[in-house]
Length: 267
Image (tube, rainbow, N blue to C red; front, side):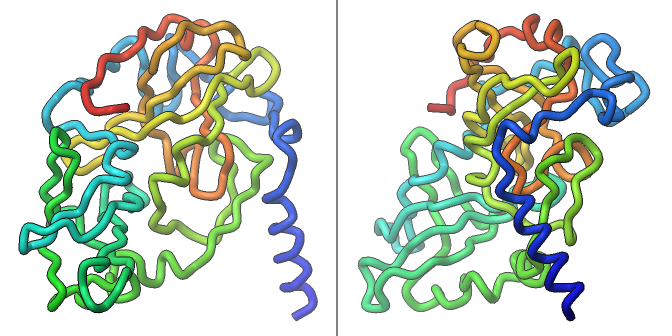
């Protein structure tokens, strides 16, 4: 029991390491020696950026940031609440929205999880239509939904000093869009991870993450203004819930050659 407690304290303490201590030497990073033409040539999981141009203007492409705070319209056509978050699985697929509903009902405000396939999202009207009524709201309980059952209940402990392919966790779990949005973004510098900007948004296409949108910080390298899209690297790659950095497996030259994106659904 003592050893288990000591390990838990040590791992929990690692989660509060100052950002300056997170920088990592490329010699400790297995991706550092495999960069070729903007991607890790020896790793098929890394996308070559010059060849990757997602269509963010398509009607089936949605901004997670814009979905959050949308009005929730119930089955009876009345405004019953607001979207608070989007839940994703370990494979990057959108599983559900978390919404606070019920203010117009006798039950008062309550949080529900509504499966993604049950949603009718209208980006133009900034509304999400759902099959929820006062009579069936209990069917959408946060704790009854299978998708946030045992996996979510199992807490994750991540080693914040690690970068690509070396994070330590208790197991995969469902995660919220807000856990990735606003995370710091880094790219592979000559000797260490280099600060680049932050995650501005997560784009969803056909119910799956199609891109991570980055807003560069002019304080780090003087990159052009605008938003830039990059492939989503999550579980088994460079990010998982609990990490404060989203690490891009690209060098500075590749990052600088990237052109700002055009998108119609991101604020």
